[in-house]
Length: 151
Image 1: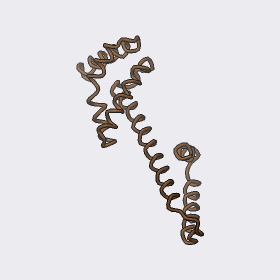
Image 2: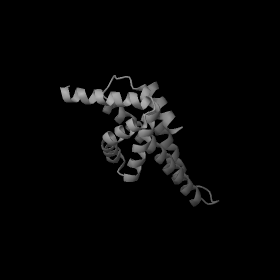
Image 3: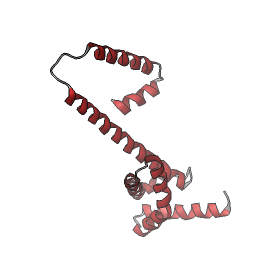
Image 4: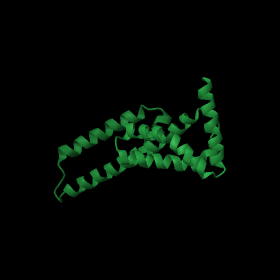
């Protein structure tokens, strides 16, 4: 790192220390300095300005609550964008669950008391078996991730 980058990193570490001690002015300065980076990163991933603004605020609340956890093993910007990335993943996961629940509700609304179409039932069973077969090929860790994300 060049001297400007080192000086900036030391400045940011001192602000995090002040934030961890409850200094709201330090949080305001930190927010102003990093808000555009966090917002642009979130907007790039979400393509929704309102969602990106929500993520920015969630990230800064987390900085306020967890600044004492910064261990200095990475640059502060890396740590901050890591928090942002996890917040984005949480947001996308919640949206996909709501979308799936809505799809299921919509599908159930279209069902009638008639007998299900056997072709549809057989296709669904085939898809289930294919999915089960694919999941069985994954490592234990990968299966656990799939299980946690969907079940």
